[in-house]
Image (cartoon, rainbow over all chains, first blue to last red):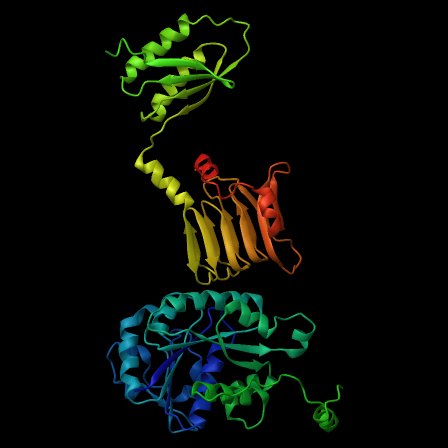
Length: 266
Length: 228
């Protein structure tokens, strides 16, 4: 029996879909059977980020309305056999899916997968209610911006009311270290203090993420960019490993490493 | 029998006059006798104003009955009613006082979009985040960070105060007064309290330690009963 994790944020554009794709990829890299579900009906993106758009035949609305079996609608990933996607519909409306219908589908999929990642649409209306219906856990994505933290706070408040979902975990996305240093961006400590939830991971703002999603290939697949390491660390933390947070500081070549080794402040 | 026993007894005290009204006779009888006594009493017209306390004992007087008594006494030129004192109150009134006396303790975070309202005082153990709101008919005490909106004395109690372990609110409201955070970013302050300053007619924020000087009788029941 697998675990269903909803990835949500309240605010749009903070990186829910990218996070879903990358955590899914990272978990698959670790050999887990993963199913990604896109619940942003009418505005599906997850298939594009994963580069699977051309393989879609059926979608989640077809499954909920019993027009096909869940297995028929699932799209297998190009890179991994153990990674599947249940795409959202582009032509239907959010109201075509009910929370009960979602619950049923997720319960069925839980039999075959270790992890089910649910990509939640922005907002707190019907789409959100559908997305969280079948979830056991929640990950809240935020960026170090005030509006985004405010919405994350609202979402956490709503998630805490759901009895079936445990205390949500937090991912702080798109951190620009130089701006944090100059005080033009919220500090991670500030965000965690305000939201008072467990921090699951931090991801630096990295052009590689945009580049990778442009090519329909999640960044987590790359071996050594900062963002990919961050996503893989998050996946390991989901599996229960204790992985320290990565430093956001840029290493300034060999000399600084040597200085650091001897404890000399540069 | 009632005719023999006086329904209204008038006594002079240092503060003025006290009318003691017999608690067992009918109210109509009281009104008639009060009228008679006051018209027959020889009070000189030039006499300064005299304060009158009406003591009705174990008789329940509704607001309407109170007004009747007050009207009779007022119609005599140099008498002013100070108070009508009764030893009894309705259960409803008692319950309201009880509610206003109560301190409701809530242990949780108030996040954006969440609203908490309590009758009486509120003791919140947790933070109020921006976008969150707490309101109380009495005082508000926050054992945590107050960065959202707090409204004390929502039903008009201007004596209400807001105290917080860390004060950096979006807005503070007490009764019908409001103050908001400045437009520039501020660091909050630890251990602060907010109250309405009677002279300046606005909300003042001060150190928590000053609260005992600002509201010396904050915890006395009498104060609450008169505000309740």
